[in-house]
Length: 319
Image 1: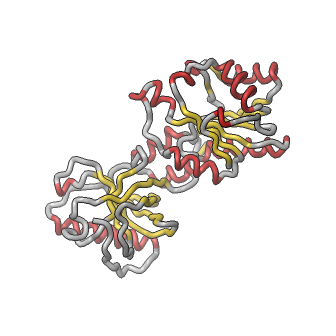
Image 2: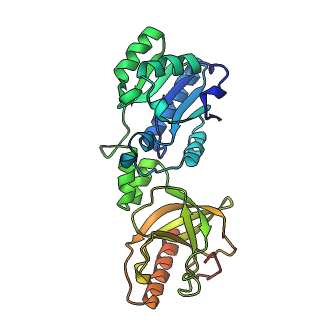
Image 3: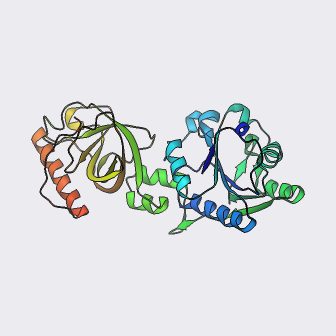
């Protein structure tokens, strides 16, 4: 997949491009329906399948207070879109100047004049251009007069609920992993760099953890989760705590992962964590010993869920 981050990089129009446009945060099942339609139409006319998205999220520029916590970083979004088999991705910088382009100019000058648009695929609620004044009706009118086709894709429904980035954010914030996974079409993943922690995991609790500084803005609801962990391309099982460590009186959110039966120094590495099962809420314990007992029980439960040997080997991870 070709990734174009500035339209100035495009020296000539694409070959019969079929394009879809959006933020695509989460690259969820609703987005996949758009991509599939784009690929179908591109194959039908011997063209290239293309996606246009923006960095940062437009609301970060236009109304930062209303900007949502993102499900995926730009890096993740690019990786996920590439896996769908699209030919070209336009990941364009969103600025106040870009936002000031009228809907008509956006279509005429950029989509047609620069990219060479032949067909466009949009969601049922698509709007665009300055003040989001452009809508499907305008697209269809311009398509009729300027010679491009418009395809509108209906919402993807799961249990009568439209799949959307907003609904997935809400599910994750409520800790409803199974429903979020159904909407996403995959487990929710965060990525982060392992940093030196407070030194309590191994030395005090006897349960070493990898402490993460996340790239993502959105974390699931505070609590304890059974997870898989991707390290250097290999998958491991683990247990992750998201929260404030109330037993120790912390007031800073932390993400700590105990990786089952793992040996090695992770400090400074970037790892990915897939959230599979919510085990329990975070809570305050009367003593460090009772906290350690509960974490041991969490690990046993995770092992049972994963169907792996219950004999835990305590090994040194990043503390």
